[in-house]
Length: 278
Image (cartoon, rainbow, N blue to C red; front, side, top):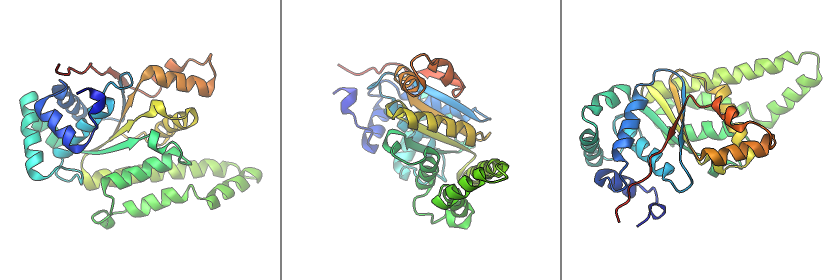
């Protein structure tokens, strides 16, 4: 069996983590532990070639974080979660204390699956809401539905038309006020999500290097501009060479795409190769 045949289903994620089939389980736990030590807004690039198992790695990391957060709606059933915690302790002794005390709220965002959306920010906010709690049962007690509705409203045709009229009018500074309002709404939204579910939010952005250039650039810019929150960590799983080519297609062949990406990633980690049994 090759890595490409291992689809990231729940069963496969659990089995390969427990048996360490591909030789990365300890790395998954160590990375989860590293995430628990971050105490400011942070952005990480997990770099590997296509077919190198990036999706598997980030989904297993998410699974570990969810299992150690009792308020996560994505937690495994009790027996599965307990087994995973025991395995995590075997790979990295005493890791439970760090992961339990931090309580990450984790979200998986497939950028490629969303690159036909009208705006990356809108689809990202929607995915956070859906992933944290798709039916809103417990979140109805908070301001999250109201805040998400207000954010969505900032993207309606009515508001776009109003902004266009402002630009044509006497007071274009109102557009800046609109941008600040949206940023404030995003901050309030993130704060409510974290307060309801844990201590920090981790957003795993996958398949960015496969997106069309316009969407990839807009997503990076949106994240940098609107998600500068001290309690939020972004993890981008990328093929850096492919993403640099994508950026160059958007800005032109002579554009320094490597330096451009350095603006967005506080840390880049090369994913170790898998160790598949013969």
